[in-house]
View 1 (tube, one colour):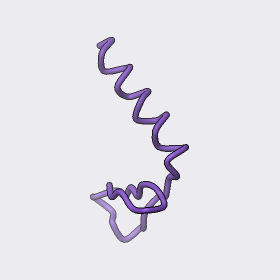
View 2 (view 1 turned 180 degrees about the horizontal axis):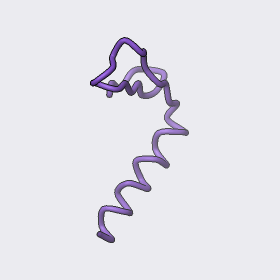
View 3 (view 1 turned 30 degrees about the vertical axis):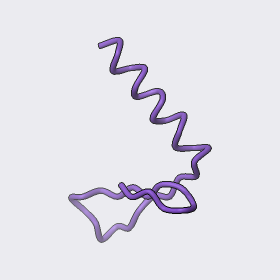
View 4 (view 1 turned 120 degrees about the horizontal axis):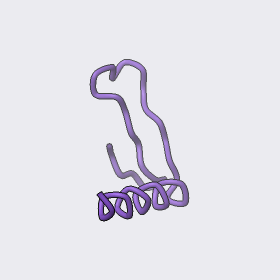
Length: 42
């Protein structure tokens, strides 16, 4: 994962040659929030 000016980049560390996925802040923040909400219920 890398935070860049345009958002967040994510790649598969086992297959880095496949490139990365790019997420805008508007896409990334709800994803992270849902993970945090889930982790408090487990």
